[in-house]
Length: 201
Image 1 (spheres, rainbow, N blue to C red):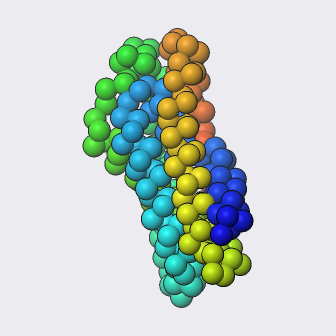
Image 2 (cartoon, rainbow, N blue to C red):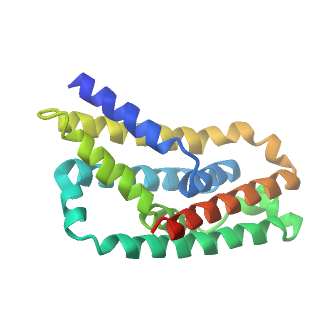
């Protein structure tokens, strides 16, 4: 049981460590101190739901309904293109919009909506959590629950560390120029992922 849990934790963490749209958004929220707890909870709970579905055998269902994949791919790409454009607009807009004090009190509803969209409209999230973790969990027959629990735990550890650990970088982001750089990086990340989705088909 402990071996399966450790394997699930290690694999889950290795999959989620890659810089992506979701992680970039959580980092920015953490830097601004804007609704950090709801955002990290939304990310971690979403991952938990998907991991449970994968371990429970949803991988077989996704193979039985292949028509879902193209819709997810194009929908996710469209959302990321728009979100990336907004990041570039913020980067090259008025400098006051990039100050932490001016950007840390945004709408909770908007933050959660963006967070959930970045999570549930990203096909790679399903490939990592549902298909990959789901299929690997079958190697731990009799200990699949422990494997899934380890993967879920890694998601909570990562998002809470990213969201609340971002405050350590606040001195660096005290200048508007640093926020411009972050917005550009976020925008490029969004567009790179969107391009990968568009041309992967």
